Image 1 (cartoon, rainbow, N blue to C red):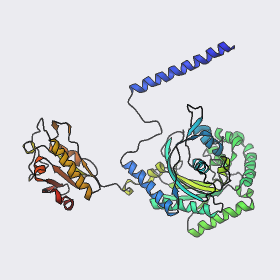
Image 2 (image 1 turned 180 degrees about the vertical axis):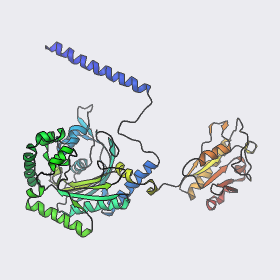
Image 3 (image 1 turned 180 degrees about the horizontal axis):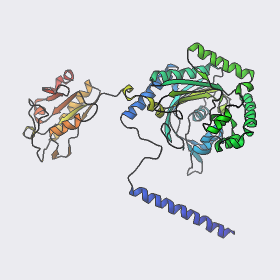
Image 4 (image 1 turned 45 degrees about the horizontal axis):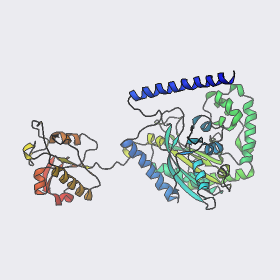
Length: 480
């Protein structure tokens, strides 16, 4: 194919892509908008539950002396490719990666640890050690959405950077355990721990696994056959039935640990025993990212809401030398964990979530000639609706003044919009029915109109006893 033919071929290919894009744009401009697959909205109770989990997480981390850090959602792709490993599933299949207008490869953050390590270097904190940091950030991974796994998800995480002693591992495990216990999630919490040893141990074990799994290559799943050539340790993490039979007889990691690695892990297990934190040593536990070494752990929640495949609610490990992988001036030790907020929300009961009291509604009614009820009549009485009801501007202003005074005594108050135009006002019965149909029901309703404005008074209705009385605006605090 000569140059002109090749150019024409490329041009036709891009024209086809442009036509496809145009077709998609036309389809989406004529359809109702929808959320991106795997990215969910949080409204009402769902958001209150989310905030409740974060509040407990932040409170627990603060008790351990950790301080907040925030990193950008978008990072240069090299940040994750250099730290997570180009052969990891995250980098190979799951990253949201794009070329920006300056011709630089950018990635929506898939995990928090690499971003924190980059921030330590960028902000010249390498010589201000140790750093105890916590974050709560949205993450992005393009994987198949399912219950407990979204393409945009939020993680709370902690990072302890600058301490090589295994006591740091224990501190992080204990912090995460205290956090989950404070949440009082239903279901049994199970802590699994393992050691990946130092780089020397990891290298020896990796060779042993490659040799063992190589003898069973044709029996492995397609994913595990690929991992055999890239990262044999990840085969141990496979849930495929054929892989499980083979991994059951795989060499044990303990046979390849150096004396220093054994001592490190022994300190961790002994300390957890003395702290009364129950755990199970799981020799098949590995973490999917290349930077992990020494202690790794996961906490699973045995719950019908999550099932077995998505039972992990918190996971972490040690990652010594991560900053040097990014080009930092020092090879700093580090350890940390992260927990998925959406997955925790699935196992938490709605009744455990504190919800703010409903705001006191201030209802505006027309002048007395247009009332449905008089102040001494029950508000649930009805009368024929009038086709047109006006409320004077001064009455709206008076209602706002009443609401301002209520907020001095109560945490929340709202002036209900009761009309869609200046001359089309809802009858009081409809306003009240709308307020009482919402959950939770407010304990009191305040009603004002022209008559109350002239007397500097309001009508206060108790929704539980269904009684009401007229009082001075100065007595609102005592009445509520």
